[in-house]
Length: 76
Image 1 (cartoon, one colour):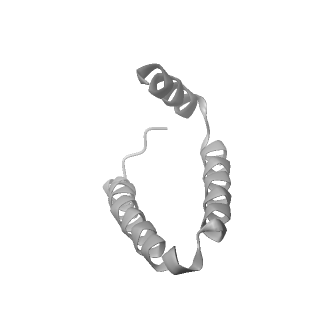
Image 2 (cartoon, one colour):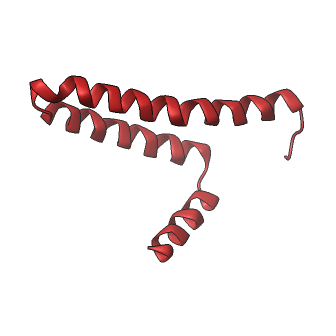
Image 3 (cartoon, helix red, strand yellow):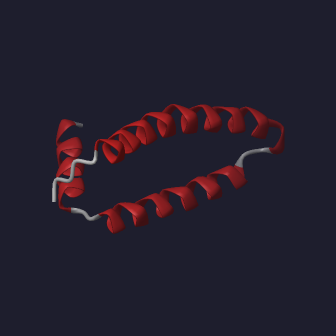
C-alpha cells in the first residue's frame, strides 16, 4: 500500500492543476454513476454521508487555499 501512495505522490508532483482538475471531473462522474445505482430507499443515507465527506474535506482545503491567497506569498 505504501508503494501505491508513493506512486500517487509522484504523480501529483509531476501533474499540473489541469491534470488534477481532469482527475476530479473523472471522480465526480464516477460518483454520479455510483449514486444512480443506489437503491431509492437508501439515497437519503448516502446523501448525508456524501455531505459529511464534502464538508469535512472542502472546509480544510478552502482554509488552506484562502490562507495562501491572503498571505500574498508567491513561490513562482
